[in-house]
Length: 426
Image (tube, rainbow, N blue to C red):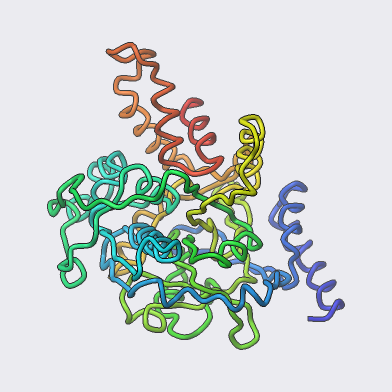
């Protein structure tokens, strides 16, 4: 694209943003993504939400990154069927690949998605069982891949029952044994790295496959085949939330920079279960009250386990705290509090839970937070975590401390702070 075309597109975009009442600070953040194409708007027909999309200047990875391909040690493509548990498949696949790379295993070992569905977040399961419109058939739920890896690190996960690959299970009644003898964990020294930056994705891919969340529009992603996924293409496109995938490589396809992602809906989707996703398309949502989400690539929340190198280890506790604070700041804000997977068998299911997750930008923390419906839901979570809402529990423990611990354990990055602040302000 020529510099003249870029200038013309910038003028178009300035007018586009002005017509939508985008504030100066938000416009600065959008322009910081280096748009090079004309922005366009998509309004989803199911809920009237508006999404802005645009092309950005390509951030080209090194040839060393292009040469990496982790597909051969990423296991077979599994099928989550109608369950909302993509994070269990992506999380265990990233964990399994990590074990092969670190030579803990000689070959790929498949771990149990069903186990994580039942035990990774009992609180989320509880509320899915009483709040979800699908509660009579499903108690599975959304979760972050970072939370998944932390659970594996702290509690472990068993190998997959071979029958789970062949037949479906009830996520209400078919609970496996909790804490069996054959549990596998991430080592204690492993850290969970999360970022929204492409530069960090490229660095991660130098060492291993990477978990990520994908902004899912139906029917485009559902029927993408061997084409490149670039977001909504028609007036009928519906946003169905975030779908967790595994990125195994980046490459060029038809001259365009794409990520090759592994999904968890069988080999019939995409090209034998793998899809090509554009790495030059940005998306931004505008809420019903004109709240603005932070700009995001179509794939985001890049996550992987990392073993700190000896040279990276700080020489003192003070340096350690400074380095951890730096990593937390550089990880960036996440586009949602909980990763939601909605790639169901029929479209009627995909539009249900996406209503519960419409993130907006918190003006104080610059972290995306959900709309009032989701906040009320989180407030009910708070009431359960803190039992009766009184300042002290029956054992004398501080309720706010219990809530803080819950947020830190179940929510990644700066979103824990936002989640704490949201509920305490209600």
